[in-house]
Image 1 (cartoon, rainbow, N blue to C red):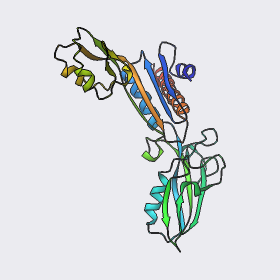
Image 2 (image 1 turned 45 degrees about the vertical axis):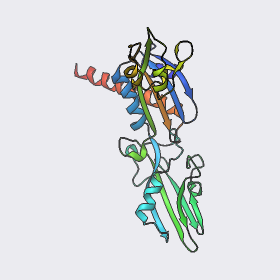
Image 3 (image 1 turned 135 degrees about the vertical axis):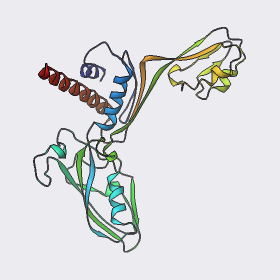
Image 4 (image 1 turned 180 degrees about the horizontal axis):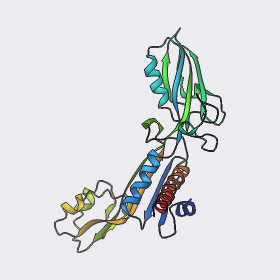
Length: 272
């Protein structure tokens, strides 16, 4: 992943240190970049990576306690597994009214008594379905029935929050320096993150977890501890809701930034 991200953002001057990388979570340190680039990567991950989300619902029968609008809203918030290679943005498709290239149909036919879960949705595309099968949609009692068709389309979070692909945040890399410590241990007791340990001497166990609250600085009477931050190094935390793997989200975010830069270069070249 590191190699492709570096290529996407345009060079090898940037350093990436991956701390955690799993299906839905990623934590890494991005160094030698500006605040502007760090925020661009965050915004791209949240709002510019397309995902499939239920955008339209045709309700043929609903005798449940929920109004049609409330039922449709719940369906729109269910994360769907997304295949970016098989679908294009609905806004970019030349079809009229939708086609298999820009949308996928999911049906729900349930009758009580039962709890209806996201896994009860049946997709017309075997590759597309709810990212989590155990999301409760509605509880039906005896005699109640729901029969509907949901249309999922590819969109971006900048258009509507239901298309947001992830939660992404960053902070400056903390720096902690200690000098002339008298060994009172007050800072270790105050630290809410538990990263300061007092043995024979004061030790920092995991600098990256520092929240930069500076409570340890405030309580230290001799001024032995100083909390700072590296303004060119950022700790990123990304969590996918399941539509796309965390790794693919990061790579797509970097690709989006590179594409924007290339478009800007092209426009400037045409103007010059």
